[in-house]
Length: 207
Image (cartoon, rainbow, N blue to C red; front, side):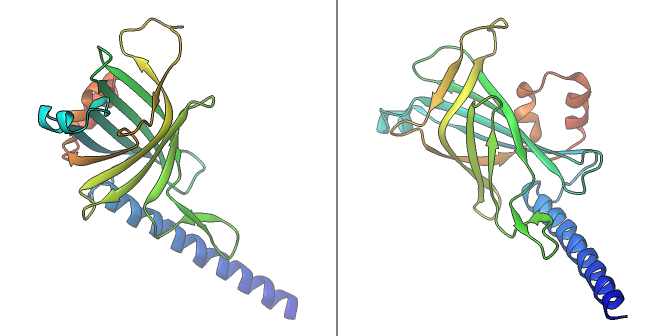
């Protein structure tokens, strides 16, 4: 009898923890996507364009434009949203448009009583490029209207390069380690998307 009660309590606790984790996941997404947690995907675009005055004051900074599109999607057999990123960047010392992309996994996690990972109250998470391509850490700021991007090293590609071009890396230099990007309309990140169906889906999202 005692064993049956213990099992029932364990199941109840596990169910409660799972529901709490799913609720936290939704709450996190609402913050990240400014309330627009669409299905099957949601989009958040953050952009920073540095003017000539700023670049003159920061002669060691190489990045002139940075665009970041964060996407969430609920995959099959997964109860938590999965995040991914696409990044576009321009440099003062390198002509052309560069981009990168990768996975961010789930929102920041904590361990629930049943050892099931669920979103934490925090807003930091890591986004990585495949095959040891480095990545970025992101953090919401300014009442969720801006994003702090922290960079160490990340593989990037030139948009016009043919397949098989040599690897390039974006390095976190003296003035290129931390960036503050502002939340803008998803339209401003459409240049980072090549799939027509996804572009059409983005047009239906306000922000």
